[in-house]
Image (cartoon, rainbow, N blue to C red; front, top):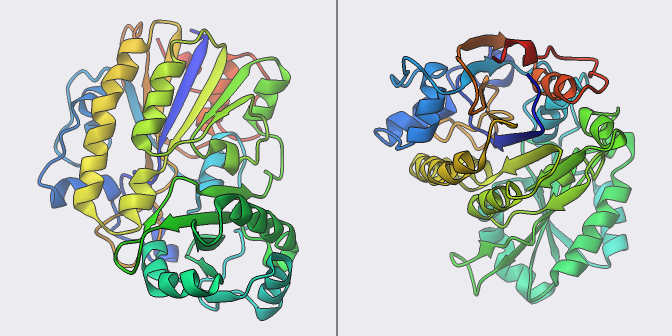
Length: 391
């Protein structure tokens, strides 16, 4: 069975239980969905339950005849990074982790070069939550015009500035300079992230939707490139375009929020495109997972599930919907980092005659392999297609 349109929705960080190598990362015991469910004393997500998410996560909500094929995927790449997860979905395997500066902060030589290029001084330079470091340095930054530079356990260099002091366009240019500078092997972080914020003072600052990510390009061609080269549409919703540094993308729609992203999806499903719509919904991770806010995370799942109704109504028998995640960020776990977890896999079509358990996949690249076979293009090096199991 082949499909004209495939929509992949990544619920950024919605892991479903720690991997067998989680001890390497200090993540034994993490389970984003289960612990969110328990902390909230249940999550109202009827669509996800009907599709079968309760059949792959121990929340006591399995259903006898789910509407989707269901399973879970194991990350084959090293780390638990957003980029590695998404790149793996499209056929790659990251063998060498991206460099990070969590313990030490960035070297002074890097900061000196960045300060010279930006013509601004730098403050911060430590691993921190974005909201916390903006609260700590935000008022000073408004007075001095300095750049707040920070990192996390992820391979990122983030630069925050108040929009009234440094307009987003200037901050984006500074981040492009930072991307250029950090292409040296010893400084090559996965992403540079512009973090504009607004607000009058401490406790009142809010990061805005003018965020921009500047990623390194994938080290090899992905399924996205192959689809584009063969004349198929490859539509990015959310930060997919940034994660792949525009490689293989034919149209891009940035998100202001999960709600905005889902509105894009619903609207785009009215188009007669032929190919892939690849969606990332980052609020789960950025707004609630990293901030260790299980109540907020639960409400975020509920809001997504409500909008999922509108997506399901738009689909016909020529559509394939895949719902998954890229890692975990257990909002009840220690620290603020991602967590090394299995991710759910739900595959839905209105014409399926039956559904069933797809079991445990050894790599996220099974998604890319399925998409490649569906469109009869060259398969990726990694991954096994599910297409012949979908009936």
